[in-house]
Amino acid sequence: MHVVAARVLLRPADMDAAIAFYEQAVGLVRFREWGEPPNRGVVYFLGGGYLELGETPAGDPRPERPRGVRLWLQVPDIGAARAELARADVAIGAEPERKPWGLLEMSVLDPDGVELVIIEIPLDHPLRRRS
Image (tube, rainbow, N blue to C red; front, side):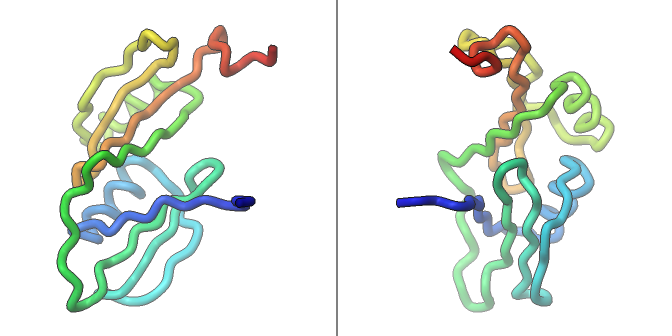
């Protein structure tokens, strides 16, 4: 299988709250959007991929809280990302810290409980070097 692009699809329980969180708190930029409530979608740039929020079509059951889903978002400066999220009143679930595997990580939750793992790869980490 040759994958040419990737996208994470989420069906938030509250579309407006999810849009506000991802745009205003996290600062993602819209790639495209379509439709009108209650059948609309918004796609955000997400580094090398995309994050798509889509409303649950009328008549479909409301989505359950996602289990086992985490978004891994790499940033150049985790301290600056933490400060930006705090200014947007996003509750920090786990403060930035260097993990045993050498990455700097912190986490926050979106309005549906999806964990966003914010990471910085330190300059001395093997992921930054070619062998």
